[in-house]
Length: 233
Image (cartoon, rainbow, N blue to C red; front, side, top):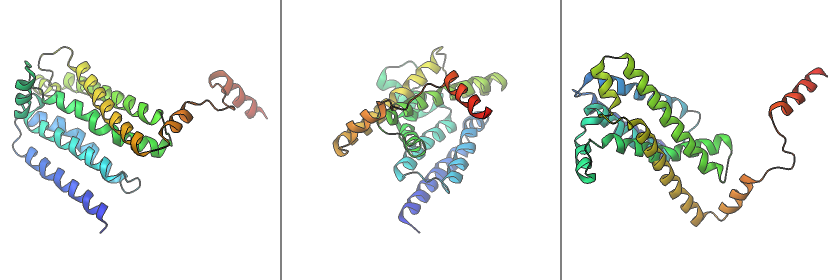
């Protein structure tokens, strides 16, 4: 067995151990189930796609750390994780801060795997390899908040409130998305400075990514006109 495969199996085993603990007598079983729909979809998807498109060990490590944080939240509910009360004391907040930590970590931990996927599939370098992952992080965070809203509206009120975890803050969704964006910005800032130190082509890649090719043409009606003309011949 390859060293990389052994490490990935270690990550999977570590996550499963935490998941089994979290699934054992969760504080709110209905909320645990709602929170774990994300796990039931994401983990099999990662395992299946890994057969055809394997990410780096760094990306898998970051994804595993985030999923562990989410799994811990599902056991207690995000509003009642013990470490969240510690964060509450540290920041002098009036609420449990664990959900804020996880949303920040979503951006901080997941932005790099998004960048790796975007660079390898989209073949992008330079400016766009940093900017698009930040936008993807914000977009994904927004989609999750919309899902939270939809689920909370259709399940029973107690489970819905536990799933939302807003703790009475009317701006909870906006703050969560903002923290995800800040996390992504910090993570990709670190990646940029590492590249600045070790990649001598970093600035030339930036310039090349912003350069407009000489054969560039508008899309919209211009492209449509070309397609119609080509189809008529």
